[in-house]
Length: 235
Ligand SMILES: NC(=O)c1ccc[n+]([C@@H]2O[C@H](COP(=O)([O-])OP(=O)(O)OC[C@H]3O[C@@H](n4cnc5c(N)ncnc54)[C@H](OP(=O)(O)O)[C@@H]3O)[C@@H](O)[C@H]2O)c1
Image (cartoon, rainbow, N blue to C red; front, side, top):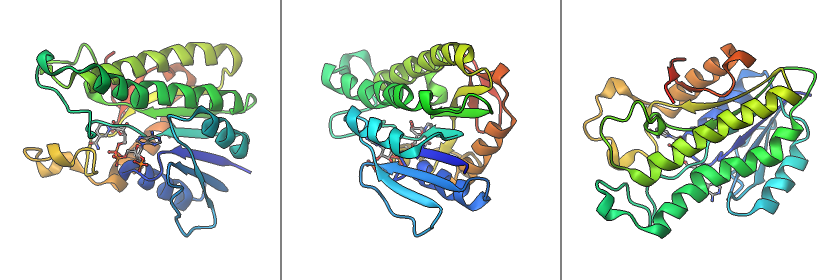
């Protein structure tokens, strides 16, 4: 029984990843985890609940999923009632920054805490978290978006750390970050103006690209962050 898990299956990209994984026929079961427990109307997709601010929900979801070969964390926030992508350091607010880190950094880290021990030891397995190119420190030419950028840069560091630890106990496993491109979802909606149509992807296209990137990765790639086209993003 081959199992995949998508955390954040209610999101634009998470939903597309779930549907692609179930449709490809490579997995017998796809656990679609979200706060609301969204339904997909597909026998291979098992909907269940998870909240990144509730560690007990992660423990329960990990127990239910068994030993998945693939875990993708597709959650994240850029703008909420409190969180605004700042243009200047003058706009930094402690509570907003804490919210960005709580969802974009601490959330995926706790998912890793509960799901990495479930990855099989005797065959290849993948843990991937949706990051963002703007989390790259060397690639930063524009500045701004302090909370989001910093929370994704910290996530990238954790991915590198987890990969080093995983290599010792599960040498066949891969742990990476993924940049999906600019994708038409509610997260990017306020920022889509000015993005050339050829660079604005549908969630289905981005999901297909990222899944084919994951298929090509080997344990030697573990710890890195990869874009939708397979290019490694500088730390
Ligand atoms: N779209 C882009 O252009 C783009 C570009 C670069 C990187 N990314 C990254 O890609 C990932 C997915 O983004 P998206 O565009 O698909 O955004 P989205 O449509 O807004 O989806 C975000 C997902 O995160 C979930 N989430 C937020 N807070 C949560 C919590 N406390 N517990 C559980 N789930 C929570 C949402 O769940 P609810 O439905 O319950 O709110 C939703 O499933 C994010 O990490 C984002 O940073 C996106």
